[in-house]
Every structure is written in structure tokens, then in C-alpha cells.
Image (cartoon, rainbow, N blue to C red):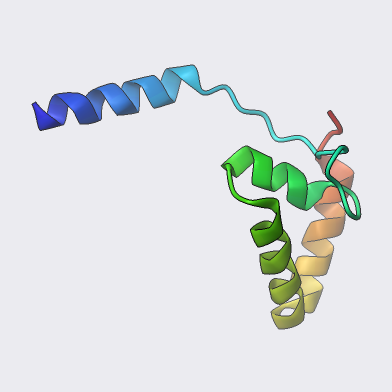
Length: 77
């Protein structure tokens, strides 16, 4: 019974969720990358932005380049 429920959840999750990553222009602060990622993963926008700023202080070059590349490559909705 337990395995049947887990199978149903996996099956439904796999075929019913059709998500696409976009920049969120409505809730953007800089370019909408963090808001788009938060919407895609179902996380709070504030948490994604705080994690990005903290990561920017820890790994400034990597996160800075990744943010700029994401801002260029992720399409607007």
C-alpha cells in the first residue's frame, strides 16, 4: 500500500508538472533571475535573493558570472 502511494506520487509528479524557467519581470529587483528561479523551484523569493547575496560574498567571481550569464540566457516571460 505504501509503495503504491509513492508510485502514484512519482507518476503524477512526472507527467503533470510542466515547468519552464523564465525571468520574472513582475517581481524583479535587478533582472528577474532570482524571482524566476524562486518561482520555478517553489521557494520564497526573499530566501533565493538572500542565498544569492551570501553566495556572492563567498564566491564573488563565480556567482557574478553565473548571474550575468543567467540574465542573458534565461528568456523573459
